[in-house]
Amino acid sequence: MKIVIFGASGKTGSLLVERALVEGHDVTAYIRTAGSINIDNPKLKIVVGNLNETLKLTDAIAGKDACISALGGGSLTKHSPEILSGIENIVRIMEQEVVPRFIYLSSFGAGESISMVPAVMRFFVMNLMLRVPLADHNTNERRIMSSKLHYTIVRPGALTDGEFTGKFRFGITKPEKGNTSISRADLAAFMIDQVTDHSFNKKAVWLFRK
Image (cartoon, rainbow, N blue to C red; front, side, top):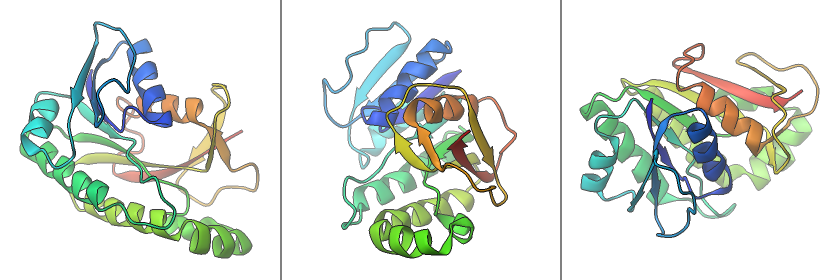
């Protein structure tokens, strides 16, 4: 499969690139800063550009099978208008170029999953600490859900830098009590699997470790 990964130089994005290459996919990594990815692989193409450069975005997306977004703002207190407009551009160009499969990295607590969060955690973590990034995810999710794309929205719990285990639980209904963290390595594996697994087509799925 031919995949474009946005946010490819971040902690999760870099693992997505590595995992996709291991799985044998052709990967286009769309990054903002040259030199932020140091992977030498004939199946990897690096495009340096911003999310408002529609010609570069179109060139990167055209002819591909799927796009993955690991884009995220770097602040808990400031919105990320460049990412909001960037997701708008990506969705519009994917529709224009008939690239239907979109995997979007969101967060547990976004959308209707806020009702699945225990009350105390909902108040102190979701409504206070993560209020701004969750608001941005909600905006992006609404745009994606209103599109013609075959999307899967992945809502992981707290991310860790732990090793890949291949042991995780996921679903679309309220989860049973248990650990709500997940390693970035396991998250990356799950997201790459969604490129070809359409079990959660046009759905949002939460993801925790077992």
